[in-house]
Image 1 (cartoon, one colour):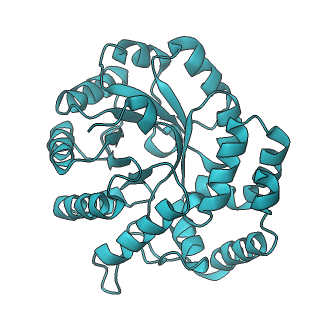
Image 2 (image 1 turned 60 degrees about the vertical axis):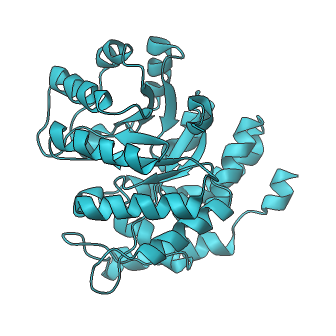
Length: 307
């Protein structure tokens, strides 16, 4: 039985890492363990093969295998979304059809890669991808990474596409959350997309958070969200201030390497990445490890905060 859209797009969704073996092949068993651990620690949903999942480093058959493996291990416990990050609109259409056949719950659709579209091209891409599937869609707005921002006018025009239901907002300006809600009302569910703006986004009306560092600290991420849901701002602020030195790593160009290394330090996954990415070394590696270890040492008392 299909989930209701309001049930799907709500809560903390880690942008799940794709695990690789020593030869650089996709390690399905290790990825299943990562997924199961996150679900057991209380996350509300999963985004597979977004930026953190190294979508554009994966072949189509690998993506399909990852979705099939995720669906089996999750077994309906939480919603599963897949990133859609292809080089052409036609390739994106082919992929969403395959994802729907597998039986996941929704999609996170990015602009087509490499070419930077104008607003009419961006709108057409989203329309055509949405037309190829009945799955509910979260649009991903990340102008810093993808060099184009979904304008409010473009969103207004896309309001007639029934299965475009949500926008993940990763613009580096908290005013955008209020502008989106003022412009579109309740037509689109809004998610926070930058870890170090999650608190602000959720307070300003976002219904969920797609997170990178949740891979390393899922229980703290869920506790932050739950406290804000209950209006316990002071307690949520305590977690957020503790978390912030780590959350800043989500906004750096090497966020994938930082998040996977944090995951490894916390014994939740491996830091292995696929070329052209390379694992961190030197001072930037040590900086991340030191930050994670300090966070682990002084991590908040969730029993006290949640009581």
